[in-house]
Image (cartoon, rainbow, N blue to C red; front, side, top):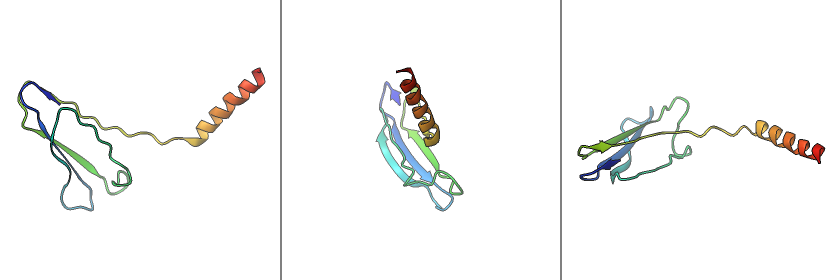
Length: 96
């Protein structure tokens, strides 16, 4: 978030199907630059729980720029990794 006037404030809450109300994760955080990781051990991202994150930005003055992004790292395919690694290793042995 960036604003010429005053810093915006940020609230992050989350809710899943098993909870009735939103739970607070971050409250009234000044939003100059904010980065956070959500651990899969603490939240049910897949399956029937359907965890949803809500990002509230308020107290901003125009002109105002905001960028919010969520990303999920793909699982490591160990079989593909080892096949590629050993293929390269054997190729190097044959060339040498």
